[in-house]
Length: 305
Ligand code: 13P
Ligand code: SF4
Image 1 (cartoon, rainbow, N blue to C red):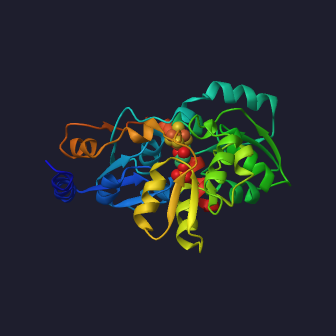
Image 2 (cartoon, protein in one colour):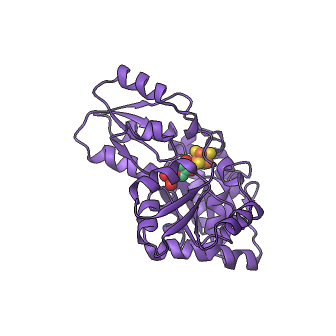
């Protein structure tokens, strides 16, 4: 079968089975074309509360599918590729954070959305890369224990100087690989280009950026900017999406190493297998965990993006 034939079959099965396909912006072009919605983590969470289909397929990583299930317990939610996890989300567990909380009594726990459902059960509020600064600024508590990403935490701390932050040393292995040396090399190869980076990058990288934001934020900035060339400091799928969307502009990868194997593991064939009842993993969550974890997502929605 050709890509187009697989896509046609997916669209037919989607309608027949009352299924909505949500895709994170890191998915490949062929998946984005058949998705009902493509966006960053925050937009996907909001979208998940609005879909009225009986079934949802999440093309992304496990914590994203868990989040859809938390918000839609009555729906059948499938993770398109059961192997797709986020290493950062697995770095810290509830027991560890419980111990840290005891050392910092009175601190509000702010959890990056890239965390497991189990860890979300002890968070006061969840944040995404696009909402973290605004939420930390708006919440009433002055003392904040920010988990697990030290780079996003450092970025938020700089933008919310009026609050006290305790950060832990977790992070995204893909974005954390990028160094100031990579920035110098990319800028010297493309001196006219603007540098747009994700806040999961290290401070030595973000300090050189013309724009720091979520995957969607980076794409919106590039779309609206009058500049003609851009160096992209997030997963390299975004370089390709931008090049397709804006052929009159040129996009360069900050590093060839900006590849998330977990996000790349989902294929168009996985989506077809889910719709044919032959693949994917149905998200199952006990009701106590769901009720305890969903509170911090609802709090995030209350504060807004
Ligand atoms: P966004 O919130 O920008 O979608 O990022 C999610 C992610 O996993 C980035 O690596
Ligand atoms: Fe997780 Fe990093 Fe991959 Fe995003 S890019 S899913 S944070 S490992």
